[in-house]
Image 1 (tube, rainbow, N blue to C red):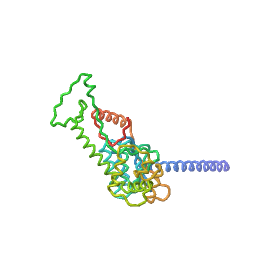
Image 2 (image 1 turned 90 degrees about the vertical axis):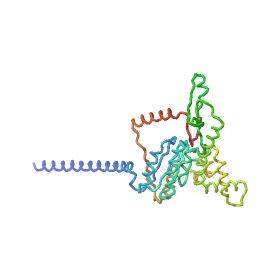
Image 3 (image 1 turned 45 degrees about the vertical axis):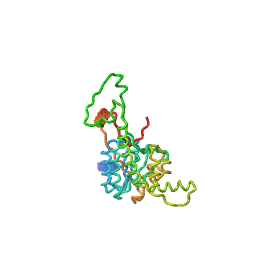
Image 4 (image 1 turned 60 degrees about the horizontal axis):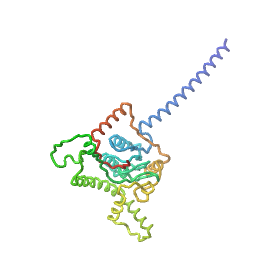
Amino acid sequence: MEERTRASKKRFSFLLGLFVLFAAFIILILLITGLTMLRTVLPGLGESVAILEVNGPIINTEPLIKILHQYRDSGAIKAIVVRIDSPGGVVASVQELYAELNKLRQQQTKPLITSLGNVAASGGYYVACGTDEIFANPGSLTGSIGVIFNLTNWEELIQKIGLKFEVVKSGPHKDIGSPTRPMTEEERRIMQEMIDDVYSQFFGAILDARADSLREALHNQRQDKGDFSNQEATQEEVEEYLRSLCDGRVFSGQQAYRFGLVDRLGNLQDAIDRAAKLAGIVGKPRVVTTRRKTSIFDLFTGSVNKVLQDVRHPEVSLEYRLVAR
């Protein structure tokens, strides 16, 4: 009887030990999973490099700016990499995002590095100029520096249908850009002046951000042509050189590097490593990426808003954007 009791106790102790080991294993798995999820949700554990993803046409920058401010205010995030894969976008939205990046760059509290993806042209490049350094893949498409204003003229179609429009306006230029009639020479002059003004804002942003790089690139090009005088280019010469690049053409990343429009050739990981080094992070940095969660309701309402926007403004679009149609 005693032997049976001892055997039962041993069996019970063995089973209890297995249960404890199993429970400890489960708790360990839960802790590891919880920490991983916590790091994803809360970018505030350990020293990190955060990635701000700028994807697609730049239209509504409010969510991006909100994420940027979260990165700015987080003590755990020591540097920010702006990953741009965009053909550009609406002028004011591009300028809003550029302005927020430029403010952070001038504060010099956290290194700001841009990584150009497949396409970072026009407004995408404008945004990049708000950061400390620009990385590009050799085959990235960039440049396309300029402004485009799209207008649609339906006059011939309207005449075929037999429609007629009557316009009552408060001034001679109130219906400038009307799709129902040709643009007059005076209207074209007014529109060109506006385009030139917005273009000069783009040009000035590049010049402010990249004057030294452009000067060095101009110096290297002169040496390639046999001019070894080592005389530094004047501000006027730098401006003239930049203006020669700002004619709307598209550059590869390698060309842009040679022209002084980007600082280094490298991929996203190279940009992350550079940001970590500038921030003084020892070892491999932890990378934080914040993505806005999208529900089916968001997708539906977003699609409806996009359709409504297209209906309201089908023929007017002032953009810093690469256009290929």
